[in-house]
Image 1 (spheres, protein in one colour):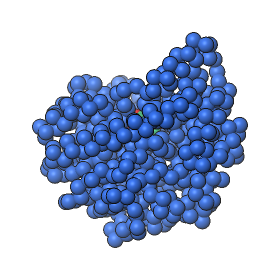
Image 2 (image 1 turned 180 degrees about the vertical axis):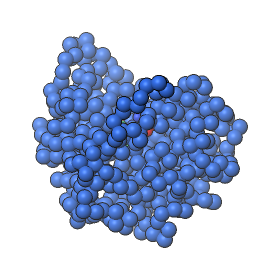
Image 3 (image 1 turned 30 degrees about the vertical axis):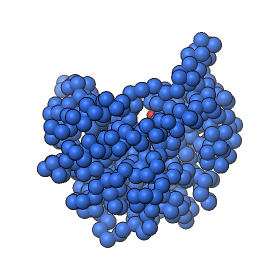
Image 4 (image 1 turned 60 degrees about the horizontal axis):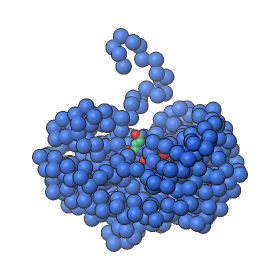
Length: 422
Ligand code: PMP
Ligand code: GLN
C-alpha cells in the first residue's frame, strides 16, 4: 500500500494482509527463483478435459450456468462420490458447484456460522479458513497437530477439550495442507464421535482426496521435532496408525456414522486434474446445509465459469487412469524432493499425501522459518513457505518449511542443486 493513502481495509480483514503464497510467488518471480512455495502444478490436466472446455466454448456454453451448477457436472460429482466412497448425494438438492474449494469454504462459513460463534480449527490450517471466519464475524480456536514419529497426528483429547458453548463448526482438512498428513480412520472415527456428542457442524476440505500415496515418506525424526516441544507435552495420541508401513487411505468424514447430516464436504478439480486456474469446486451435504451454503454463494459470485463445468464432468467420468498416474508421479516427486532436502541437511517430515513435504531447517542453524523463506529466493534461488503462516501459535513450528513437489522433475532437480548451497 502506498505510504500516503490511509488504510481503508475493514478492521476484521486487516490482520490478514496478502497471502503467504502470493508473497513468496512474487519473491520467486522477482528473483527468478524455482518456486516450491505456492502449490500449483507446472503441467496440464488430461487432454480430453482441455478439449472438452474448448468444445464447450465453441458450442456456445458461454452464459450463466444454473445457480447450483450445470446438471451434467452435478450428476458427475454424485456418480464419482457414489463410486469411490459409496455415499449418495442427490444432484438436485445436495450438490452445489462453487468457484473453487475456496468459495465453497467461505460460503459454508458465511452461510452456517452466526456472528460471535466459535469455529474450531486444527492447526496448521489453510489460510482461507481464518479469513472467512473473520468475514463472518465469528471467532476461531485452534488445536495443534502433534508430533507422531516423523509425521503428525491429531491430539483428539485436546480437540474435545477445546469445544466450548459457542463452538458450532469444526473444520477438518485431510489430506492435510501443509503437512501432508492423511488422518487415519481411527482419528476420523473419534473426530466423528466428538462432533456427534457435541452436536457440531463439520466442514471437511478434501481437495487432496485423490493424492494419497502408498505409504508415508520416511521422514527423519532424529533431533528436535517441531511439534513435540510445545503445547501438548505428555498427550501422545493413542494408536494413531501413522506409523511407516501402514497404508494411508482417504476416508471422507461424511461416510462415518452420524456424520452425513452434519457435514459439508468441499473439494475441487484443482488438484485432481491439474487445473488450479479453473476454479471449479463443489460443496456436498444434506439439503438444509447446502441451502445455507447456496444462500451465501449466490451473492458472492452467483455462479462460476460455465465451459469448465462440462469439461470437469468429462474428466470425473473418464479420466481415472490419468488421476492414478498423477498420483504415482507425485509420490515419486515427493521421494525425489525429500531425498534432496535430506542431502541439503534439512530434517524431512513424513508426508502421505498432497503436493507438500515439510522439513525442519533447525539443523542448518536456522531459528526462524519466516526469515529463512524471505531470504531464500535471493540467497540460493528457491522459494518455499514457512509453516508458521498456517498457525496461531508459532512456537512449535518456527523452523518448519513447506516445499511443494508438484513440479517437473528437472525443476525439482534444479532446486535440489541450489539447495546444496545451503
Ligand atoms: N483447501 C486447501 C487445503 C488447499 O490447499 C487449497 C489450495 N489449492 C484450497 C482449499 C483451495 O482450492 P481451490 O483452488 O479449488 O479454490
Ligand atoms: N493452495 C495453494 C497452496 O497451499 C495456494 C493457493 C493460493 O495461492 N491461494 O500453496
